[in-house]
Amino acid sequence: MSEHPNEFAVGHRQFADFESMLKRALSPVDPPKELEARLEVTLGSLVDMAAEELEAWELSAMRDPRNWVRPVAAAAVGSSAAVGLVLVRTQRRRHKRREASDNVLELAERTLRDLAHEASKIIDDQSRRK
Image (cartoon, rainbow, N blue to C red; front, side, top):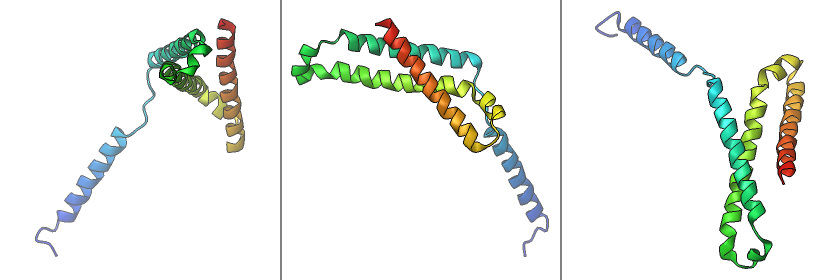
């Protein structure tokens, strides 16, 4: 045995304190509303800029592979921003979907429906701007 009979109790208390500190530190935190709005505006502007870049690109320049970098980069940035925008907009309504769903399958169905709806809104917005 150990020389100190309370050594186990002290170690256990320190572990419990450490565990409670970890729980507090790792508890989920919702981001501020203004961050969500700023992120949506930024992603939307990236989608718009990428679309403008692709619209300005001429097909005749396709023959030279050195000219491919800008349109490929615009397509990659625009696609990534569009996916991010869809996710941000869909995430916003997660609590309503959760409350309206009776089970996990229905929640997944509603989420997929929202994802498709937001994606079609972005595509429609871009096609109207042309």
